[in-house]
Image (cartoon, rainbow, N blue to C red; front, side, top):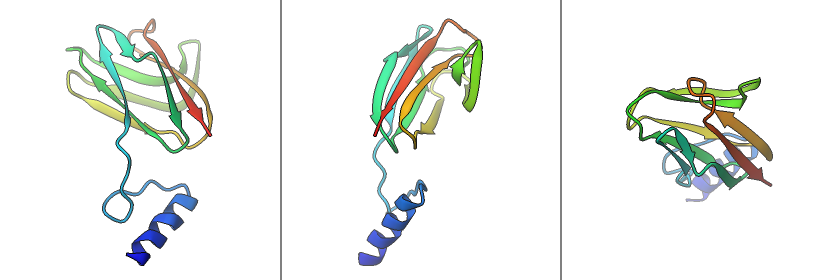
Length: 114
């Protein structure tokens, strides 16, 4: 048990995300995509949190960081259709706006607290 705890602490110190029994992960915070909206539109999480977006619409969407006029390249993931999930881990505090590249009026924001 001590070795597992040490491995988990070393991984956390290095900024690594570890899965499995050595480092049980918290369930990701969730954003649902329904009727061309991100719900909730604004989500606050702590540093190190994972956020999972689940597409509840029948059509494809994306989660693309930044704004349509100024993409920041932090993440861009497709959500091909109903039931698809994309997950992003936030390792730095800050405000992370995002949008759907296919439907640019769809916008959301993740606030990461220290």
